[in-house]
Amino acid sequence: MNQNTFEWSFGDFTKETSVSSPIHNYPDTGRFPVRLIVRNSIGCADTAYELIRVKDVFRVFIPDAISMNHDLINDSLIILGRGILTYNLKVFNRWGEMLYNGNMGDLPFNGRDSKGTPLMKGTYLIYLNVRDFEGYMHYIRQTFEIL
Image 1: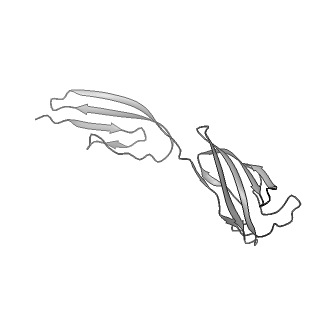
Image 2: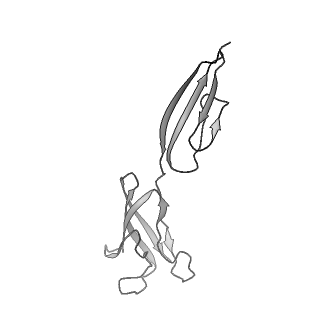
Image 3: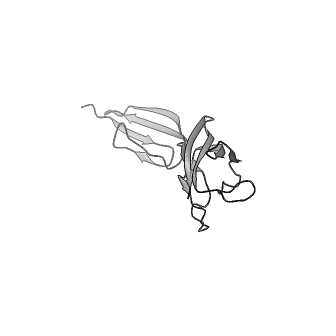
């Protein structure tokens, strides 16, 4: 009988000994040293090592609307996401006039023009240029509403 045993060590203080091809979920990003020891029925063993990298997932969330009713909920256009290194956000009105040009870390767009006057309710255009942690650029164009 040719019965092999498998001992996996995933580099995050977890182990698996019951299957030859396990599925493992890491709790965070990073680099992890994975080790596999295989033993056959007569006790001969072989060991394999591999350093794997778990990357962050790139995701960006852009609100569809801001309310400007001073309830502190959706009063500003705040860009959220994962895997974002930096971004530049531009907001335009329907005539193509740029109303806001800000980078990650700047005060968010609050629905006001450069003089502090509240903008009219309506549809506005967003140009969002995002650089992710891998160095790739993502160009997002979409509309949002001021309610």
